[in-house]
Length: 480
Ligand code: ATP
Image (cartoon, rainbow, N blue to C red):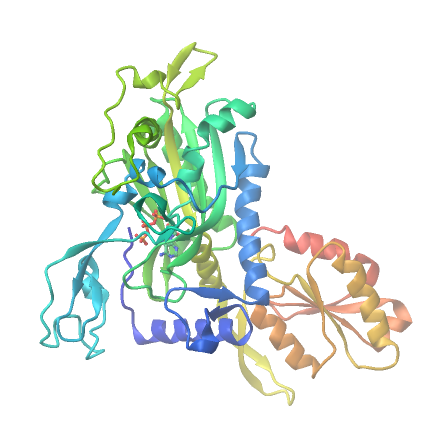
């Protein structure tokens, strides 16, 4: 669920500046830009890929590596088509769509207030005099074919979420590891949705990455776990520097049929509040559906999946293939699942928006000019430090290179000797590098360097032997 909305001019300008900076500094490019671009797909450039990796690594570390009750998984994007029948996506993963008979553009029928007319950009669809068709359901899954024959039996889909790869491996994980309920399975990977109106930069894309956790619990304990996960997930964003006032928790009033409770974590983007992550208590819906799916597959003749009826559940469904035997209570049951489902691209965009700031800094002549800076949490910053010789002579580049080589063993650092020192600082500010280390004439005399802090622009002299320690402290510090 999302509540994106159109914002004021200054918010629009802020978003334009963020998009321009991410293009200029190589964070994000439009996919196939050289050919005019395609809608709803994005390429991450050299610093963008590093930032997004840091976001995914922070998520993975906090769930899979720092906790004892969560394991990881990496499942295939292509899955058996029956997975999508059983999960409900073949029949129900659709948005209502309308066409404008005048301009032939398509819009989400439930989001017309935020859509722009194809003829007159200042108007909403239908306000230009064009007649809109009755809403029709449009399935968001991308279809593809496995193998050389393109018929219904070889038809499958690019996954629209990573969660189903986890559910269909539930029994494999239980059988091959020492997990005991309560436990979770986490996965990060690409998902694809043929969104009717991709927009708001990377926020709504057709190809994107998800970070999903399925946390299996004993029925009856689900409510408690649900509330814990809502808080933990909100705290995760704050721990990485998002300002608390830019986050809100939005419980769903109208619940999807499979959900016992859902709360979204929303971020205040310059274009309005938008969902970063949904936390849902899905009960035993998914595992039960797959129990029905694995019984139905034997009857499937390769025909149209939409026409196929799933078989009814066995009478003792709670003892089926996807049930769990609880050693402690000696009971067999289908676990309930709490699902915190986040988007790596949306989280990355939120971190970029929250970090973007403007202040002023002196130019080469000492005049104050506007400085654009990304105040990213040092853990997320694509480059942790830049090593800069003041001049390209007198042994400074060699000394700087030695420092760079030493720091590079532990962290992503950059060496840069081109252009004035001011310009080099400004570039690092714009990609969010927390520290700039400058090697100058005093370095050869006393072994000290200048360390400049990105946020305060304060400079201190530090012995070069202390640099690693300083970087460690900076990266692991609490958010501002
Ligand atoms: P929305 O209502 O915004 O379409 P959703 O409720 O359908 O999102 P989920 O199915 O819960 O989203 O997916 C979990 C997460 O995956 C979302 O919170 C979001 O971060 C991410 N996500 C979903 N769709 C997209 C998309 N089209 N582009 C980028 N990220 C997405």
